[in-house]
Image 1 (tube, rainbow, N blue to C red):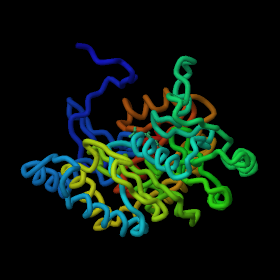
Image 2 (tube, rainbow, N blue to C red):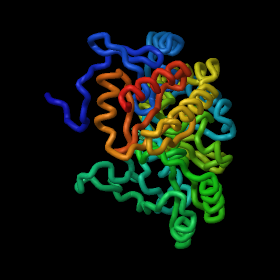
Image 3 (spheres, protein in one colour):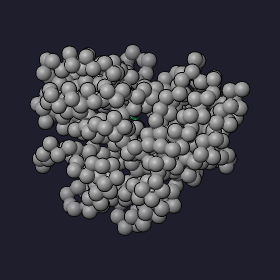
Image 4 (cartoon, rainbow, N blue to C red):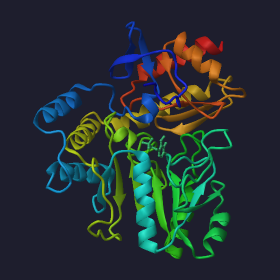
Length: 374
Ligand code: PLP
């Protein structure tokens, strides 16, 4: 059987990883500034994390959500404490798309409505609120008709106000920082205004922190830079450092009812162990603080480079915009300098390294980037 061929691949096979580095089949070392789309939060194969999941795998990997699994409560306690949301409840699933899908469902159940406001260039996974993800006109959004989605320009509060006036909106969904859309940061005033409009109109505010959360921007969640509290927060990616797990943090205004949401694999023993280990390492190694300081340093260094049109980002979620397509630049970084980076659209290089990136590794990247730009 062949694989269903949907991913354009680099001709490299990564077979090992350690900290901020990965290694291919030939043993070549790469500096990983992408972490598999923001997934590697604490670094590849962190020994504490590997020990915890190995121990758990030897005991029990999975049992169903029909019996008590105290690892779920341990995870909820740690996450509540470290994120500042210990008054919220946690629903566990396996991925970012599932987190957003369940958040949209909760918003619809809560309000009895099904219209959703999202923003242009946003990405919420392959969900009901998906935007067009390729230039192929056959692949358009939304991918099903459960929700009617209005895509509005980012940072335009008046358009949001007008859209809400009809009274049929159940939710606004917005990324803490747009990742796939090119590292676009919502204005603080816009986020505060959204919070107010949602409260006034009985609309649920969903913050998609799947990419921008879990310490990436130098605070636990990107929206915390704006000082707002959403009704629902979705997480995945860095939560398991590569082990699939996602979650919805749910405000105390929502009352759970048996059967309202459900999943087979969500919150399984191995996933919870991985997620608890990630939070332990984040706390013990002060990785949120590290993302803030190393990120600030890296952004400042990048801003001194005249070849880059614009540097955007917070912490270790950084976009480098060029006047031209970055495909060749990224290939040179990978094949000549051995650095993994990502892209957003055609002209933006996207950096999402492990939160443990050191200042020396940031300097190493700057040197390699200068090598190919000069
Ligand atoms: N939301 C955001 C902001 C994302 O960046 C992504 C994935 O890139 C998703 C949701 C979907 O997550 P997953 O691929 O785990 O379904």
